[in-house]
Image (cartoon, rainbow, N blue to C red; front, side, top):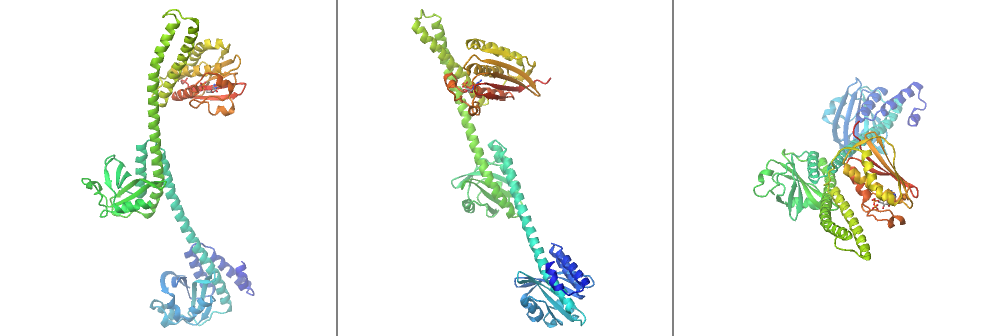
Length: 580
Ligand code: ADP
């Protein structure tokens, strides 16, 4: 209340209280109209005037905002006048130039606008208060009395206060209003941006290229209110349609009009009327006929225009500039996604081609290996006569190597089928106890060689929904690794238990363990451990990669549950349980 104190000094207490209340009232709203209404009403009653009028000063203009009669009637005027117009009113001029209230008799009737003359005819006394902010008059308040009773000392104090408070209150309200409008604009922009991001996420979630294009078109059309859309790639001076919502026109070539080319060059969307759009190739005029307006937006990635989004609207209404701007952001995101989708599609094609190549190559390799293996076995069995000892040794090594090569070929074939999505598990109920027993039987010869102690723990009698051949392959791999990666006769425990909807089969050993660094990579294709002992053992780094792939293919998983160098490892295979 520092503002109010000095003009109030020496005033009776009641008046002071009333003035303070008036000041609080005036400053208590942030709505400019409400502030104006309060200034007029409170001021009129405080100084017992018959009429009060508030005007704003904007540039060189006076805007008469509202006028209030002591009977309580408030009229919003909104009329504008040139400031020069008040040249003939010395009181007004004085108040605005001195930035001080000016008091006097009647205003110059003959100088007033005709519509005011009637009202001014009754006026006997006036007070003109400049509304000041930042050393400038931003408005003025005129109080008038219809009787010859000049505005006296008390009134003047009240009016001086009112003038100061009003200037400030009005300014604040206007600033607030502008701030609100700016905030609203920002909100709208944010909402549009949000819509573009949502659309981008939606488009990005589509994996297939044709779906990406379809979504892109749908979203783009919706964002600007278009009735028809197409997406084209650029080829020289032409565009080639890549996608339309119905799939028609795909592959057709359209010349690029100069106006569109100019837009493409600046990376901005170009709007055309039906009259301006003359680019339809012969025979395709009917395609553009239904449209009155066109919007063509370039799809730009890294400064390069990779395509165009064209949109048509049947109504002859221009596109909303704000929507076009949103489309711009949207096409940038869309272009990026489109390019990524293309790259992904290319990568997938390449991956598929590679898998197919691998299958063929491995098949080609297996046939001669089988023949070679057969001849070697026959030779070792003496089918071609006696084999001298040194040659037998060589033949035995060759046979072992051939078997290893065949095993590798078989694994590579499974990898190729898995990666080429050509492996469909033959799923049926499989008893885990049975599958483990069989795997242990297959592992026995090797277990005996390394003198391993292999135990099957008494666990739950569980059945899974899986492909028994694939489960066998995974268990073989895990047991083989447990038998391989040990520097002394290992103890291996296999257990199974039900975990809700799944069955967990664990294979635990007390072998060399896996360093924390290796733990992160052993499931990758061709990844082997880095320890010196691993290097000595035969292996190709495909076992865990394949096993995990097979488990996932059956709706399960394979994880390294724990491992400590020198203390052993536990792998857990999880598979869907048969509902009990
Ligand atoms: P490979 O055995 O042919 O190297 P795998 O994919 O089966 O390929 O295993 C990858 C790596 O994981 C192995 O090279 C080894 O370093 C490590 N590994 C797998 N199982 C075990 C285990 N039971 N104990 C210690 N290390 C293991």
